[in-house]
Length: 370
Image (cartoon, rainbow, N blue to C red; front, side, top):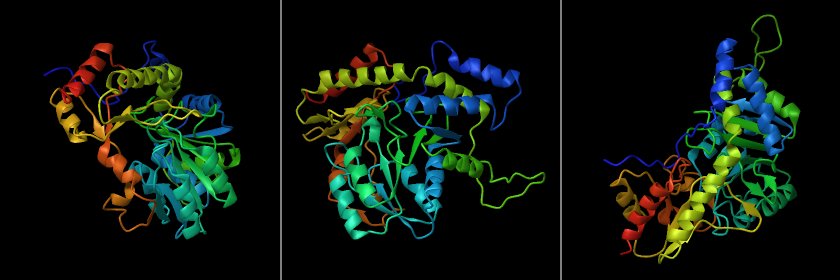
């Protein structure tokens, strides 16, 4: 069996930055959900993306949950959410006993369609919040989306779990809305094995989110709780990994872009192959290089051919409104997200891939056209 090529696996720095911070945590015995690494990771990431405040949490999902809570989303409230996303975007809406309404994508961005968003507001004028996702590192059309949301005076939460390092018109994704979230899951562009970050230009709400994330423990000599709390704070050890990884973020983005350009050069001429969209205002991190197929070769052909050679690939996300758990909830749009799901392929985009491994992938794919 040939060596496994992963879709997107953890990639620690060659310089060993992560171990320096981890060693400091062990040397000082700060093996806890607080400490210098947690504080440092929060301030360093906030500075990197241009936000005023950040809270380091146990996952990106926890960050979305607390963003919804900070936006005062509660029982019966309607929240607009892209249908083409991972379930972690939508699940926290249910945690808050709110009601998701799923919004279609457009082919121009693969993200939330401003046209469908407008239609959704016409159908549901009493909306509490809108979650926007930057899928696979591609930015949503934030000017149009923010104009619509401001017109309707709703909170905007950016799920930038896949887009750390992506810019929209020179500004980091995750910093346009009221709240932004990032994920450091094992497959993300930088990883802490598991973890997330909530950012905002409202330091008071971030402080409140930290309070909720530490079991809402009141300032009292005894253990007192006046609000419902959660065990969502990031570990000082995990945060140390994040501080080290943040130092190589730009390198990881550069490699992801190299991988995308390699695939586009080698596969772009194949009949029926279209690559994820490019817009003049978007500087993607290309977290996963993805294509859609419109010819005789189908996604399953590629999945099977690559898996036979011990190479990981996967479909584009299955839309939320097609998921058994969410099928009872409304969907606004046409069939763009369904077509992307039916025809989409996420190619291996691991930042440790060599040119030899990239060639191995493209030769297998090209073989399906011969």
